[in-house]
Image (cartoon, rainbow, N blue to C red; front, top):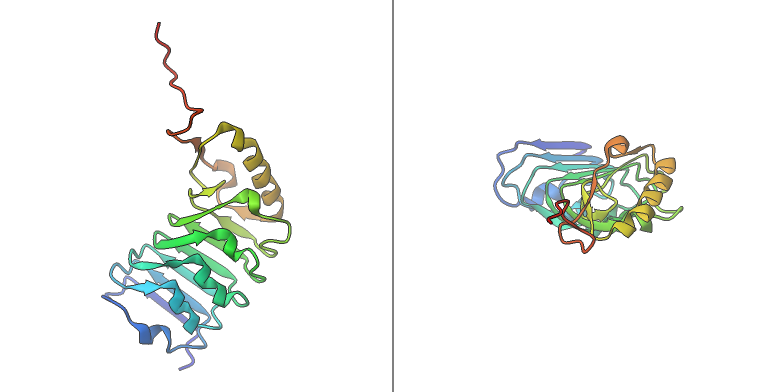
Length: 188
């Protein structure tokens, strides 16, 4: 079968379907969204050696480690993973030569924007990172002293990346567990 694009949206699929993820070796675009009971691990993507675009969202049984995408290093251009049980460090994708869009939202992905070097993500145009990444959206800092360095890294990244998730409204805050935290109420 010469299927090039597959979208599973609100599909009433319950369980694992390994044949589905090994039957389309020419697939270039895969979308999975709002599939509440579909069980899928990112390692199964090895069955799609030509995959260029991956969009997975709001599917609670989609799991795996972000480094499972490394089998697609030479083909992936767009990755959007949102509200799934995906783990790992986003920097494991830094050397993907064709990656133009990387959106990791509401996932258990970690890392630090300060680790992004000049040669990392060479063709990236859009970037969204979760709160588990230092410098990601809604990240809570443990120390106030980390903020200037992170902001410098984000500023440098902004020069390279056309669209960093909501540049104008990047929300960062201090963690409640921070030793730098203090109450704004002063009692006498």
